[in-house]
Length: 294
Length: 268
Image 1: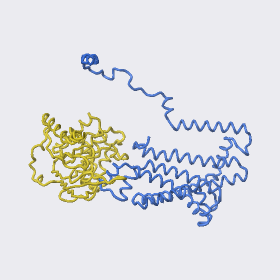
Image 2: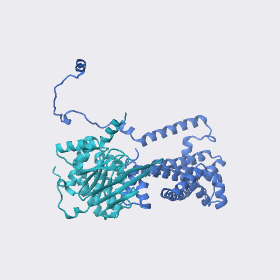
Image 3: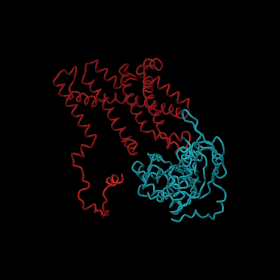
Image 4: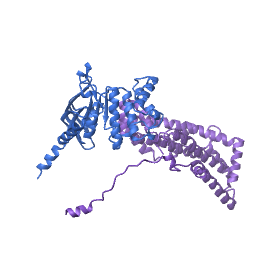
């Protein structure tokens, strides 16, 4: 047995110690990336390239189809857009839409803040939030428009009513699940410093849940934007000049398809700008900087 | 490293205990069970103590710390700090947690250290900034004061947490296994740094650990707890001399594992 054990012993080796080399003498340890590699790392550039590609495909298909009534070319759409902007009509319509949108969005977010504040501080509030979101979140905002028209008449108040509905549940749901996900350690740290009630929510929970809150705000924004355009398509003019939805509807009736496309294009562009400029800037300045989101 | 507390300190007010824990039974609820974490635990911490709560998992040492922190109310017995019963969490008992995520990710190192001073409305902004920088310097992180926590290593994060707690100059510092998530080398270094800080500032701390070695290095007085539910097994003075530490380590190990050995021996 002992002979067998001895055979399994690893060989004995001499020990040694070494001086490590000066890193500067080893050669290339880091080198800057090439220009092409660095350009490839810019997300905006990559996306711009994608947009150019899509526009080219559009132009090619529409030229091949050659039916401006059904599918105008990219060039025609851009021309209609430039004309609309130059005449001021498209700008005025957009401003009308955005004004209503901002009012509805702000009111919705404020209501969400109240609801989640209540939900996070009391158990009955939690029940209220979960029940209400379960009931109303699946309900399309546009389905409430007839009711809004009945209660508030033809005009901005009924638009704001449906906007609040479209924003409130998405923002509340995300904010609340963000609050629930805040780590126990951070909660205890906050309480340790004597923070309670509203100060605790504002100084610990809100910043700690910011990634989820931002997601909620983004989803809420998208919901609000599409609800607004849909609502304007349904009943159009409120207070004299209609919004973008009404612009699209009018031009469809007049078979100005290029203008319809220009209107849609504006809707898309505003969505893109808000998503990739406004929200991105907020994210870069907060959750990304803090390492809470990659 | 000579540690003066191993000999009796001359100050007069060390005679009265700072923290008195008497007959404390702690219970907490999980979804299905009511768990008794500790049963009638007594101990007293005096000013300048590096008091260790040592025991295996399930001995309720963290629950005791939470009790002192004011996060858990005793169902029996009393916890008094400076003669006053502890009602709720407060900034006179600063906690340092094991988890790295105890730092607020949306604040820089300096803002993190300042935050409790401002949140508890104890200091003006200027005073908080001065004190924060002084304590950040004490843990050697001046260069990193404007950096966000996610860019720091685990050891650095714990240093910031310690600086943040110390900057409040609390009556007692509560440490819940602050070095348990660190690698062994960093942990050893942090233990020495903590002792140097203690030499410098002479704070009082209550330190939870499950490592016998760490208890002997960090503490001057060790409370040994038995598990399920936690009860006091012994209270002993630490001994950092190489021979003393080794025999103390054996003694504590015997204390903690004797029951298991007996139980194993008793079963047929």
